[in-house]
Image (tube, rainbow, N blue to C red; front, side, top):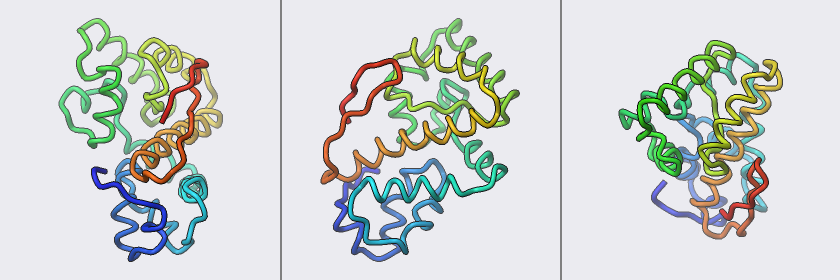
Length: 188
């Protein structure tokens, strides 16, 4: 996502350019951008983002779970081995999750195992809206969710992640303030 774009460009470029430009917004899922390319032009970045979220929301549960499963675990093996997308590396890097000490790494690993065993996909959180402590609190709280609540919460977190990524990609998007789940306002 190193190339920045504009909404005007996204609305008027060739479909393959549109899809390539937005491919990295969604973790290993360039098909999301392909799912909205024919809906152009978008009046706002919000409209573009909402359309892309709706593509994912319209998937049946097995397809959504497969999509969720393509995301890396927080502080997981991929983080420690540097095998994530550049965007995920940057996001997890805000809390230094790839450089946890042994005790903290085991705590995250245990939570990741418990979560995956319960829900069948990795715990996904918009980490840029959290401190390490609040992320752990969210992790522990969400382990108590029922499946339907967690499927919806996960989509909401992915929507928050992708919106932040989109805001970084498209500089003509108005500056918005994203509110952390723990009450702080965090600028885009």
